[in-house]
Length: 539
Figure 1 (tube, rainbow, N blue to C red):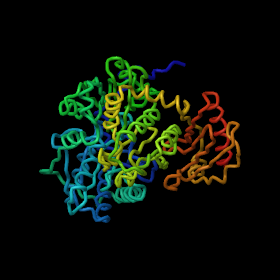
Figure 2: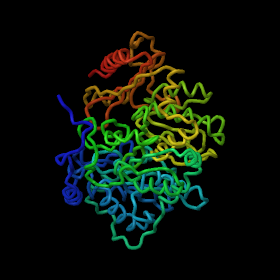
Figure 3: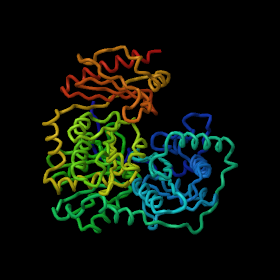
Figure 4: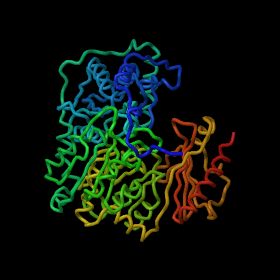
């Protein structure tokens, strides 16, 4: 069977932008239908207006719920509001603004009416809250991240600047659904008049010299190609090039809500995932033209790193290199600043941490877990296997508490400038020291009941004592770093591990697995993982 993955999008793949926006205003959700309710995942509420999952009523109600939530929490400072390049982001931003203004919330929007990347919004919140003001700011970023063009997304960041925790999002979602069910009678809306502005881009770009050695990049003459993939970072990259006089080319400055310039992802959908070889195929065609080529998703919280010698790096590989480099080149960080990783990230990070003499802080999936450590400097770096990370400034203070794809992309250039080696070459050196792991994520079918059971599983439910011929050394349902429930299971041996988590959107569970032995061993781990999990969640 032939696949169109990695091939240019065709006219039939493109969304009808006019129909999408019309549906945003015309279709009214019925919250008795689960698919039409406000539901916050790990990164906000997402859905398509065409499926009555992201419509004006959703956004009006959710914004009103956020107003009520921030009042209950005593948050009285400004609310920073930004949006990415998805077609539904502009109308949703307008709806949110109408509700915020009617509720007399002090709102700050972009000074140049530009798109606002997620890290720039996080940076703005923290900048305000660390400036000694008597009140506290928070923010909303309108983005479904790397999701397809027909989707919209809406995310709340409280005063710590990172993703809201599940207590906050559950309250906001429940209240929003109540408001929709009540016919939006309690939702205030007004036409915005003069609204305050904020230079998200200027403040973010000017501050980069306090976290990235831009002088070294300039001196070394690193040739950088940056592809925003049609996302919110588009004008930021040009500003970075000009502000720091870098040899940096914005490979594709086009912004088009249909994303007609993208190549199709693995499932033949348009998806702005900078860690996907299929989605990045058009970018990879330029890999020999630059010392490093980078990509970002629509809200620039994810990164993709392309080198002439290695092509598109696996996100786990780059995280390991970034950690190894940073902890040897950041003298201003606390000597006991831990290395933060998610439970499903590569174990080569564990080996790097051990070699650096640093504590490994392993947490469940979700960047929100890194927020407290980044705020107080006890965690120097926090990274996810899905190509999202952030780290501290040179002086060990917080930069962002949300993922920053622009930052991690720039770090690749610093690494080249300082070491004279590409991140791909440095990863090869790590594998020569620690072994060369093989990592893959696959899906396995599961009913809703089975997924629910997996999400609440206890390690004692696993009776197996061996995995792929090796003794099981750990059965984890709580993360070692903070003892938080992982919403699934991780099983570990000395040579391999697997983790299983239920999907939030499909009738499957995800199996993440890694082997330090090889491909055949990984297949064996995956097969046995499925048997172990299926036995534990059998109806």
